[in-house]
Amino acid sequence: MSLQLILGINSSTLTIEADVQERRKQPRKDLMSYSQVYNLYNGQLIGYLGDINLLGAMVIGDEPLDVNTPLTISIQLPELPDIKATRLAMPVRVAYCKKDLSPEYFNIGLEFKLITDNQRKIIEAVIENYEFRRQSPDYPPRPV
Image (cartoon, rainbow, N blue to C red):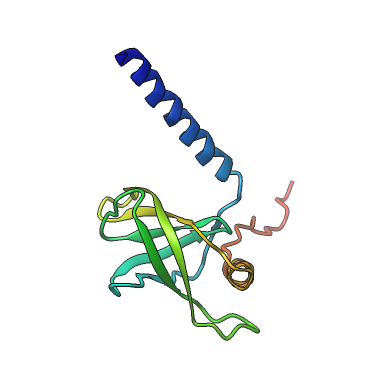
């Protein structure tokens, strides 16, 4: 009986890991604008938006959050052309929380539970206008 229980835990863990890997195929977009992200209900600052895609976001925060915690967040939006909204509120689930490279911070993965067409357009505008684009410098050719 205990062997079956162990196999059951391992297979569900593998299923969860496979699901996470499938979601990782959606490219993340590092942002040049570190927008503030708040817990909408208590007004507490969770942290700053590090990256975002249409499935979720990564927030860099001072305090850890418990995995699987449901929240409703408010993302303060940077200026966007043709968009008058100043914040984006949406329900999320804390997908992960781990130490950042700087040990005083935490990387908090938030999975969007529901996203409207209007929110999708806003997220796409944020990505388009504030994505950190890594480009190779255009150095002149080396002399021979």
